[in-house]
Image 1 (tube, rainbow, N blue to C red):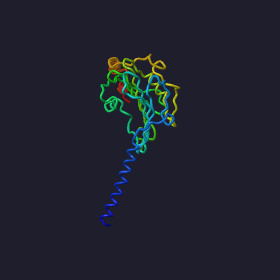
Image 2 (cartoon, helix red, strand yellow; image 1 turned 90 degrees about the horizontal axis):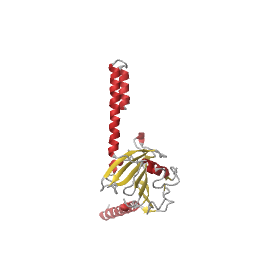
Image 3 (cartoon, helix red, strand yellow; image 1 turned 180 degrees about the vertical axis):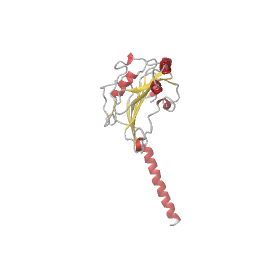
Image 4 (cartoon, helix red, strand yellow; image 1 turned 60 degrees about the horizontal axis):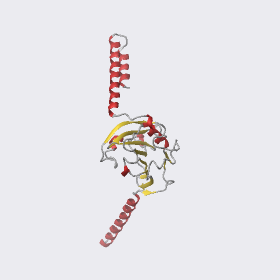
Length: 261
């Protein structure tokens, strides 16, 4: 093959690759969409969450949908952000590390974040919803996440679909698990699961009845639990030393107290 021919071939390949990269880059952009196209389903009182909009992003990794408002007014208005991601040919190996993700999460990474409560929610239609409630520069916020869908080979992953939710309220207000349960039950993903509640409103369904535990009260609870266990272990030891239970029975009691299976 002559040099000019080789040069032309290399040029053509370069042009094709450049075009493919350009197409891929063009696809890797969020585009505003109408509500009926968004697979995230949630009815809210729009006066409580100003500026909500619908977005979609589709690229080689999969497809993502977003429904939310701008976090620039955080602390002065209610913020609600929802992301639904469906990976193509890939899987999430583990559930989202909620606390660990705050240091790299765009709207939180430059702020001081103090987690005050964590746990699981009851409203999950397809999988367990995990949550943390935290203060972000003294603004009450919550992060909720669940992962489900097609599992990888030998069940080594959580799934290929993930739903993340951020809720932040005005400074001085509170967020509690009851309110988050109501939010989760009001969510749906089209073609996956439907909302169980007709609408989500701030403070709906008795959300003001339960206060979030502070780190101090949480520490007190842990200390009391440890004291109770110490007392139970002493009683079990006394029974064993008095010959009222066998060594096997004693070990079983100890394991049960300590939560060892």
